Amino acid sequence: MLLLVPSRAIPLLLRPPARLAARAAALASSSRRCMHPPLPRAASPAAAAADAAAAPSSPKRAKTTTTTTTMSAAAAPAAAAAAAAPATKKAIGTHSGTFHCDEALGCWMLRRTAAFADWPVVRTRDAEALAALPIVIDVGGAYDPAAGRLDHHQRGFGEAFGHGHGVKLSSAGLVYRHHGREVVRRVMRDRGADGAEDDAAVERVYLRVYKTFVKAVDAIDNGVEPYAAAAGAAPLGPPLYTDGTTLAARVARLNPEWNAPAEAQTNAALDAAFERAVEMAGGEFADEVARVAASWLPARGIVEASVAARAGVDPSGRVVRLESFCPWKEHLYDIEEELGLGDDASVLYVLYEDDRERKWRIQCVAKGPGSFESRRAMPEPWRGLRDAALSAAAGVEGCVFCHASGFIGGADTYEAVLAMARASLGAAGK
Image 1 (cartoon, rainbow, N blue to C red):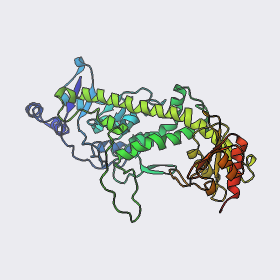
Image 2 (image 1 turned 180 degrees about the vertical axis):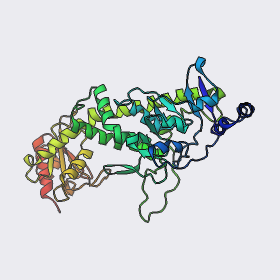
Image 3 (image 1 turned 120 degrees about the vertical axis):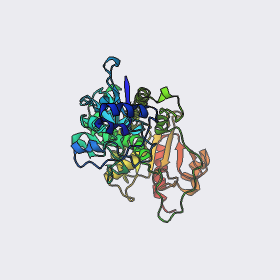
């Protein structure tokens, strides 16, 4: 049975029973949702729970201030007594009312750790109930990982993930920061991914999944714009469209609408909807971990080995041969940065075999991710030519094509594309 106690009813606990009964009857006919007055910030883990009802600073929908407690119908006491009852120790705490993607994902991740495996979730803003729980996320007004307090709404909070990411963390990012490696390893094992027992592989997947998945959850929850304004740039105009398909948007739609029937807005209905949100967010997170482990990570290994062997392709060290084709661009930039390869030593050309046509390609490396400008395009006289005309212009037998912009070309054999790369190196400045 689910019992609902508005926060404004808590002072009634101090009144005589007769007055309590009369006042409770009046409250029963009033709206079941109200704004909770903010409590002082917590200065210690014990006092942190007193801040559980503090209004969030992030631009989320207004959160309800009710306490949700689940019990059997036979044992259900009065509503006021339920609010004061101690919560179970083995439970994950988060706020009641409207839910969001960050705490849904955070709860899913915590349930994949050894410490909190498959624990139930207590959704409440009752300070005493939260204080009794070993782990509380997205509520409480305190960030104290040693005490199991992972909130991000309090004044002065500005924690970021690091590793080049400066976006303020949400509760999902906080859980990921402190438990993410364990969760990533667990998912990799569950999905049968190679590298689950390799600490270096787990670390690479952990860092990558923050960039491709968790960071967006953090940014959206904290109201961070996707584009940083350039210094002196004019303000951006209104968006041409809005995207309602993000994970955060889909989780938000699991909340009942403002005018939904009363039965859809009960604590039981909200808790059931929250569990659906937990599974939605967690399932997509697990899919991303599996994808990164099964696809992104092996590609990284191929590119890393190819860069290490580049001197054997050409003494300049500026031509790389991929032993098998894979997505290579982002890996190449990362590896160059890790190796400290500056502009005078960076890779200019990547050679690989086209799996479909069984011909070879030469591709110029762009100046940066997303750029269409090559570090060094193939010579201008080659551009737009094909077959015999290209072979004559390049002085290389077996050429097939050179793109009009000079960023990619092809030939029948590896030896031919290597000759094209070497000719392009020698044609610098021409």
